Length: 265
Length: 202
Image (cartoon, rainbow over all chains, first blue to last red; front, side, top):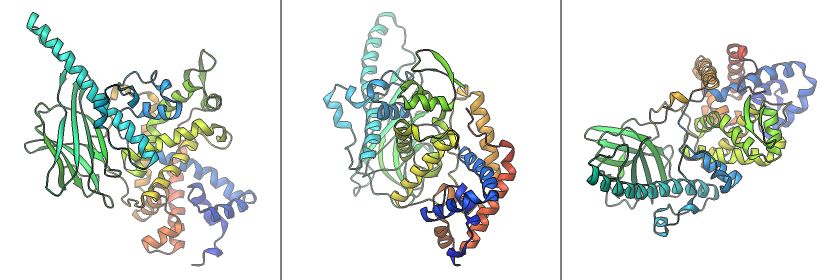
């Protein structure tokens, strides 16, 4: 097939799909103003192209993404007013130096750094939130001792360290579970994860006996990864990260990389 | 049409064209309103391409950075705002795929219950309508032949050139063109009743 002999009209559909090379694009645009047929069809095909993105399956938006995007674009003072429905703040707002030890090491990639900081901030805030809630729980327990009323809608679980499932794995991580009036939330953070190949991905599971709940999928960067999920509490006793052949598994298929027992999931 | 507390200091009803004018003037309230209006659709599309929530959020960051800093590049006479945003989203996402060096050739990810939106109470009439359009587009895509679906997936969602598709699938270039042409023609016939609607706020 001699591509140089193709008629410019043959490029119309790919032009409408924004899928021509620069050279092909230039060639078509040189032809376009003089071709009424292409102009007419282009309007119709462009309408199709404009609809194709809407065919995308719906997925839940990452928690706190709006704040992170607005923080990046507008600056953090702007975002402190925004999105009152979430409590995730920027990393600078956390005064506890000891907490900073739990952040994901900043990778080399600049863009990943921002995402990583955002995810780390989410983890840190939830950990800080846990601590704050612990204080609340202590105070509530004192009140319980006085008036015997039980606390309701507020339950806190500790952060548990994820440990390697095999001797040759150097990864480590932290899983934090927080329960508030809006539900039960899991934050998983891991580092020094094995390198992914092809379509491989890490999946996080909450396990109770033979029941496996898929808490989500993430892909690591420079060995670091994190995940946030809200789930229905089912007294899960184990949290595990597995290395999967792809992101589609509904049950664990790959090797467990990190795992930890959870007491009050 | 939405109400925005904008630079005017009042609640005003504005459309996409006015949105962009306000954003050119660095009106942060208008920008946030724009984000709320389009975030779902853009994120779903980005995730559809990269199949990775971290990368999809990176794409959102880059998209809205470009909108904030390059809003004057939007030509209302040439594109709908949603079309313009989707086009930028796709460019960023495909650049990401190329830099990652691996493009997944499966048609699409299966719906994962852990990811699906659970909060039905937040559904607006507009969201329901967009879902209905999306469902019809999905059906129209599924009605294409398997061969046509494959080239549309590779070219539109994965960003391969027609030459790359011919090489990967081991078919003549003329066959790639033919499949794309027939696919676009069939999609246009199935979806023509939606016209240039899409996410219309004009």
